[in-house]
Length: 629
Image (cartoon, rainbow, N blue to C red; front, side, top):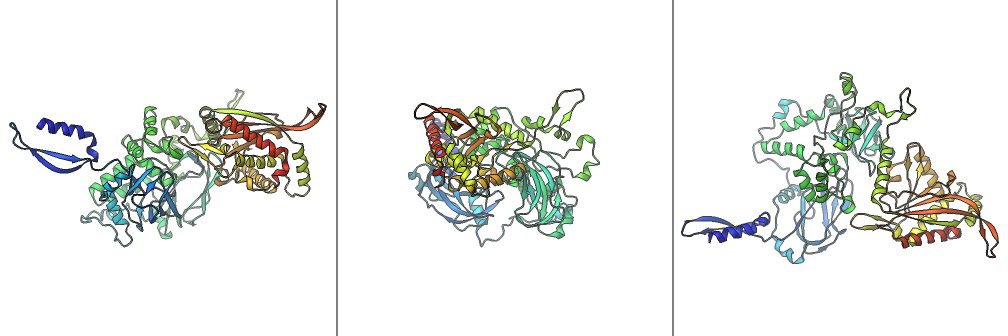
């Protein structure tokens, strides 16, 4: 009998994590008097816990306004479970999984629900819903109790005898916010702080620009989202290669508190925070969070939102893997467990340190050794260590006497262009389709319109309009590859390749199919001027569903362009030139012709689809009156 009982336990061992102890049995036999054996029930079937997500870059808590699903309802990817009021707006909590809603753990109307708190449970089978009728999670119960509108502030159950320690050490600072470097472009990994537009003691309001950051795309203003006063500037102007999440400045709600931060350092603040912990268990938890979860906290501080499954987060935490270094292959680039495993197998495990490190102000730099003149940066992963170890003086062209060349350090923008193009050519299966179009009617209509227009219409404006209408006719070409699905767009947002001194950038004419030629012409001129002056805003070049690269003005007859990921097609436009062609009687005549080449991602745009798109493009260009309707 004992052997049988032990065998039963061995069979159920893999399921013990999901088991609930029901009772203790006593097994009696000839050699044993009484042996206690715990019997486990596998009453809870496979399920998934839904946590409160970060629905805005600065969100820490949210209020659940109302549920749009009830227990037992089916759920598919993209469905909205509930409406959550964040610190910015009311946003829908969209589902990424399929199943059935088994239990709601945080009631409708709850306020102050923390990011990461469990709010609901889903199961893959509808028949399993009833088994979760009395399901409760201890952590969600505690969180829900703290999030009720009428609840009193949560207090420790033990006497608060450790609170005077903050006064004794003198290390506690008034209420303040840490302003971390946010992601100002989708591909940004680091930035250069060009100049500060505020000084310590200045008042700030939502929308104020406190500094200019050079990203991999352009120089962008860092806008603050809260009221207060600048208490401390942590990073001096001119600092380069600042990693996302690095604390740039400290703000405080009261001007009287500014002087309290004169000697503020991030290390000192962390030490003061540890001394004010009331319970040893809380101290241990905070230290563990600092060492194991710092990358996740850094992302929260910087405003960069990292999408990762709970399983991936747990696995990354166990293996001390910062999620910001892991490339996701899930939905919308989200990180799944396999991505973390692939990162570990590659051997590129970065050394995890506290992300909040002190960046020495200019006054302190003067007293340091020459080798410490650069502001302290966070420890980069090994793959970036050599690049970040370059001296700051290498940012200018370096000419060595006697050498017939000059070395120029890559800008952030040039590095990003190189990385993106390499990614495109090595991961996207390109193919190319070339077609010749007749331009005689376009040139004639353009000449007539320009007599009536203040803003002169270019041939490129006709090409933009024709491309947008062709995308409407052939929507498969207006799609993107996202790993596990293909996303098809309703509007044609046309990216225009613009050459600048810093490199190539692609500002966007949004919904170009609905715009007239005059509007397109004025929009393109404005965007091109901004791009060349390095004044584009992120929303003016982030996105786009299709790209046009026109080298005709440089006298190029024909060329092949590289796809701009995650887009699936790019049109390369050559110059318009006069060519002899046979007329309807076989006699030679002169026509204005232009060659265009469409580069396509074969995962998304099949050859026939690409050919259909070029046919529609040719139709619109060769009959430009259709572009005026």
